[in-house]
Amino acid sequence: MFIKDNSAWIDVEAACKLFELSRSSYYEWCANEDNRINAGIEYARLGIQIELLFYHYKSRYGARRIVDELFKLGIKCSYDKVSKIMKNKNLIPVGYKKYKVTTTNSNHKYKVFDNLLERNFTVDNPNQVYVGDITYINTGEGWLYLAVIIDLYSRKVIGYKMSNRMTKDIVISALLNALKARGYPKGVIIHSDRGSQYASNEYKRVLKQHGLVGSMSKKGDCWDNAVAESFFASLKKEYVHHTLFPTRAQAQLGIFDYIEAWYNSERAHSTIWGLSPNDFEKINQNKFIINGKNMDFIKLVKNNFTRLSMA
Image 1: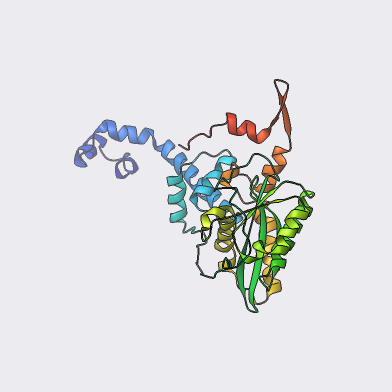
Image 2: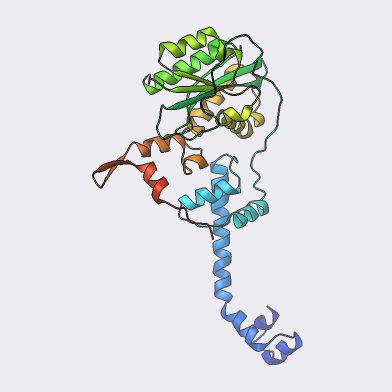
């Protein structure tokens, strides 16, 4: 401020009158200068922390997820402030480019399963409900198809298979890989769309052999399998649509890395309390004794923890 910078040789009272400023306001401003300097330093530090987080997560997180990551570090910050800083620093998360390719052929004569989920995607235990689906990835050699199996409990991709052909074999292999990873549990509900791959006699035979229960979405309703659709949307938004794959082999390696090193291991999911699927499952393996009863950690969190609002 001009008055403070020149206070050694000018009359402060006269200068305040000249600028139509009360002396009390001027002296209050002077008294708060240290606070403003400290606030500016803290703001700059916050900006650096946000930038580090943004690039650590490969430009995949927007302001809302950055707020969550800051909270984990013990830094309480509002969405509006983080959003403003990201805008000022031009930290723009990767966007979503849409392609329209149909991977579901429900025009077949196979018998379909009833919809046992009815869009209830919340379960209390692992190996209770799995969901499966197929998507496509464009490469220089043509389409690469990806079939996945996801455990609704932790949103973890527990089985997957990639192929240049979209046949029943790809969904069967993904399911068998998931069962092997989980120790071949019985009685699991396996939910999918009505595609011919999932309705095939061979696929149904695998379900029966392993004591599994089939479930299918209503015809043409992608919301009935929203969890699998959400995974594919994240895969394409955060990785596929920003990467060129000259060969199918390169796409396979990249998708393997996305699933294992990022999605299952690091990516925060709002439905599982901001944890990654691996962390969610690891934490919930720990049992706590309360009033003589075994209690799951995550259930304790759900029952007793109310997240503080960001001020």
